[in-house]
Length: 309
Image (cartoon, rainbow, N blue to C red; front, side, top):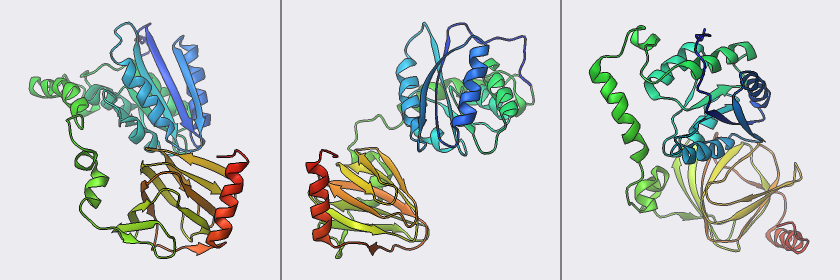
């Protein structure tokens, strides 16, 4: 249990967000924080856990303000995905905590300033204990990992140095291909043309589960199709639109955007610029067309003419 005699600083502000799997838990925690008279800003709920990126960006940009301590609170199904997105920003130390002891350890060791909760695994009562512990535990304080004893001087010094060293990682002046782990996988490798779709090329990076780098030339169109697997992708370069015809939804994707398409969902794609993306799916690659290329191009032109782009 958190120390009820200790209260968080009056200048504390919490920026919160969740995906649909963590929305209920996030809302309950915001009510709890408000009951403690803590200022909160709710960025709402997104379909997927990329809400972590927006919370991470806001916390990162606030770390230089001495007047207010800004932290983040996130929730998704596991608590992992939102934390990964948040940690892409310098000065953000996001950790997933499933117990109060994990919260105490992560505040003490990692100076965790963005707490990620699991909407599927954590009850509201347990989450309150986790949040209270996270609020009331200070950096480098005794914790279960230190056997409730002060940290030795050598370890304490390492913790201090890590706070300045970690935000520097990845900020050196390198090209995208030199600094991006995904780009390094495909660097100097020739992508193979996708014969069934003009303008496309692909390089398989790993089999089962399969991942690949895919490129399409500006103006290319993928006819409506579906797969026997669900797949997720992240856009690395360019712009594209995906029409999910099964769900009757449209997604406009730019650099850094993420999209998951469930197995069997019929979808059509238009590329506005030379576009490159990383894609991952379970099993081996397959593709079943639901229309021909000319039909797809006509449908896309009609969509764009109607102002739906």
